[in-house]
Length: 190
Image 1 (cartoon, rainbow, N blue to C red):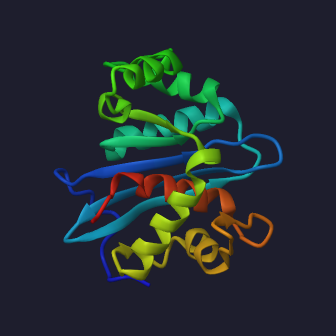
Image 2: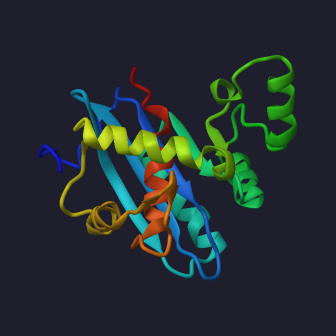
Image 3: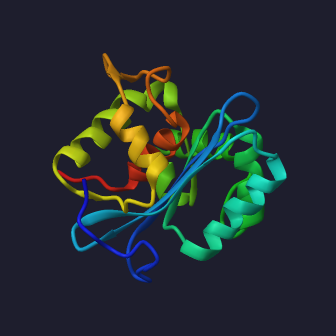
């Protein structure tokens, strides 16, 4: 599945991406961080948290942002309160009222992702393309996953594509899988 690499080595000049699938209650909270080095997407961090506490997950996410300094952070758009909290804590040019900012950028025909570090992704409209993109990167051998990321490896081995949609019932650790495919969003190859 992968070429050996050191997941502890964070290349300071590499493009890095974080995928976050925030969830509460019955679902788990998934976070994956990747970097692009030597023509491969390398997984640096991959974890899923059961029954997470909102504040603990915000703290953990901010710690990971400090550690890895991702170029972009892709997050499931279904959790606006967590997105706002993240944008507030990151500061800089992040627009907390991101829905209005996205509308404004779309009206101006500007790619809002270019102007944000924390980018909400609408799974209902993008799940098929993200699943296809993940499958293509895996099949082309462009992803390296260290054997220590057992939950991510299990999720990839058990993932079931049901007519372009991830079968969540058949897939183990589906939240880490969703965070993984969010993290891959930045790596577009022709």
